Every structure is written in structure tokens, then in C-alpha cells.
Amino acid sequence: MITSLIRMAVVLLSLLAIDALAANPQQLVMEEFRVATANPDITLYVRNKHPKGQSKFAGERILLYVHGATYPSETSFDLPLDGMSWMDYIARRGYDVYLVDVRGYGQSSRPSAMAEPALDNEPLVRTETAVMDVAAAVDFIRKRRQVNKINLLGWSWGTSIMGWYTAQNNDKVNKLMLYAPLWLSPSSASLVDSGDKLGAYRTVTRDKAKARWLNGVAEDKKAALIPAGWFEMWADATFASDPEGMKQDPPVLRAPNGILQDTREYWRVGKPLYDPGAIRVPTFLAHAEWDADLPSPMLYAYFEKLSNTPYKRFVQIGEGTHTVMMEKNRMQLFEAVQQFLDEKFSPGR
Image 1: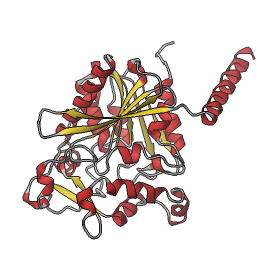
Image 2 (image 1 turned 180 degrees about the vertical axis):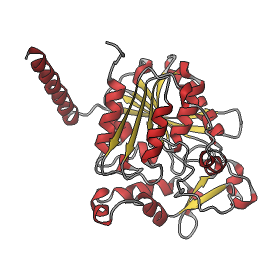
Image 3 (image 1 turned 30 degrees about the vertical axis):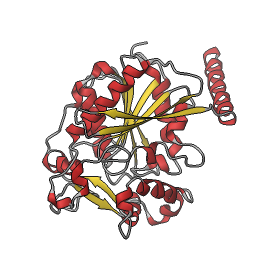
């Protein structure tokens, strides 16, 4: 009885803390950086948000996010839908939060081949290159805050980038969070690969982006899935991130094809790029039931491969797609990830 009362008190205090935070949101500071890479012509865009008046953070209170195969980090992770982005949500809870665009995306440098006709060059920005870009961002953050380890969060292709990086650098990672994990897909059709010859990059229109987003959602569920105005806000910000693509009629977003080449050579033929068994940090997987890009079997298969983590967990969110972080049920994702970040769990205790 006493134990139950204590648990109820803890839950009540937690709810009161959440209400207080919503009523008096933490003031945040945003900073932007250019991070050097081994290529003198390529720099990476890194954005940081943290509570105002605070400049020292323990490694377990620092997080870096990376995007997926098509869209940049800032228009998904830091889009203020209904006045708040996912980046804001985490930073207001006392975290030092970063996002990075790998080369070819968003505000990071675009390889020179992206200014040429796509078919004149081979696919750009393979996963191995993206891992090196994340490594540069991680080392920048670790040096800036003078910490040994930070937390990593990746979405879609970003799960491969963060997973592969962690498998090689467990000593630099505190916790790993993978939202919509990518894994082997020999029988799964790609929504972004038409099967044609791959050039350096591909182009996406707003109509194609919307159709891909809602792929696999029942007709009677589509209208209520994305709150009014949210898709338009996201699309405006995302397509504006490619000024050259905006000059076309209709406007397009250019996205490097390296991930598609990797999918053809590795993921779709049963050859993993890395071994999740080499990941030795606490790992959390999140997925949504209507994800047609990376379906549930990938989640389950990847989870089984995490054989050497201190502990692991996954959450399956109902009524959501690959882009659930910008849909009506986004708070389920935010809260599940936040719980994993905040907790101090030790197996056997």
C-alpha cells in the first residue's frame, strides 16, 4: 500500500512538473556553427539550442540529431509546429541539443556535382561519408563542452548513420536512439527508388513528398493525421532549404543518391553495412505502425541484432507514419524518447 502511494505521488509530481513547464517554458538560446571536414571545400551546418544562461552540460545531457535520406535536419527536428519543435521540447528539459546536416543537405555544403546534371556523376554521399560527417560533428560538440560521451538520435537513414558510428565509437556515445530503423529489406519496395539509373542526386516535388508521406494510410484516416497547416509549413521550410531547386518550375528539392546506391548494393541484397551486435550502449528504437518506408519487420529484425547492449527497448506508436514526429501523435514519440533520455536505469537493480 505504501509503495503504491509513493508511486502515485511520483506520477503526480511528474505531471505537475510537466504542467509547470508548459505554463512557463524554458527560455532557449540558439547558436549556429560551421564544422570543418577532411575536405576543405565541405563544411557542415550544426545548430544548437540550450537553456538560456547555461553553458556547462554533462555528456548525458547533450544530444545530437541527424536526418534521413531526403530532407534536412532543421525542417523536421526544429520546425515549430504549434509553437514548439522537437528540438525545443528536449532543450526545455535542460538539455544541450544539436542537429547536423550531412553534406549535400540543408545548409551544409553541397558537393560540386550537385550543380551539374544528375546523370553526369555517380551517386553522392554514401553512408560511409555521412558517418564521417557525424564523427566531425560529435568531436566538435565533445570538444566544445569538454565531455567524453554524448547521446545520439537518428531518423530513417540517420539510424544507419548513427548506428554505424556507434558500432565504431561506443566510447563516445552515452545512449543511442533510432527512430524508424533501417535494416535489410530484400522483399521491400523502396518508395524513393524508381529503379532507374542513379545519378548524383534525385529531385522531389511537393506533390510527391505529400504522396510518399501518406502512403499506406487508409483513406478515412488521412484527413486527420496531419494537423491543419503542418504539411504546408514543413514543405515551405524544406523546399526553401534548396535555393537552386526552388528556381525550377515546379520547385524541387535535390537529395543525394548515395543512400539509394547503398540500398541497392547492401540492404536490398541481404548485406548489412555494419553489425548492430557491435553496439554496446543503451539503445532505444521507435517506430510507427503505418510506416511504409521502413516497415515493422525491419524494427523487429534490428532489435534482435542488438545482442550486446546493456539494455534495449522499442516503442511502436499507433496511427502514425514514417513522419510521425510531425503528425497528431507526435507527443507519444517525444515522451517515449524523453523518458529513455532522462532515466537512470541499471539492469539488475
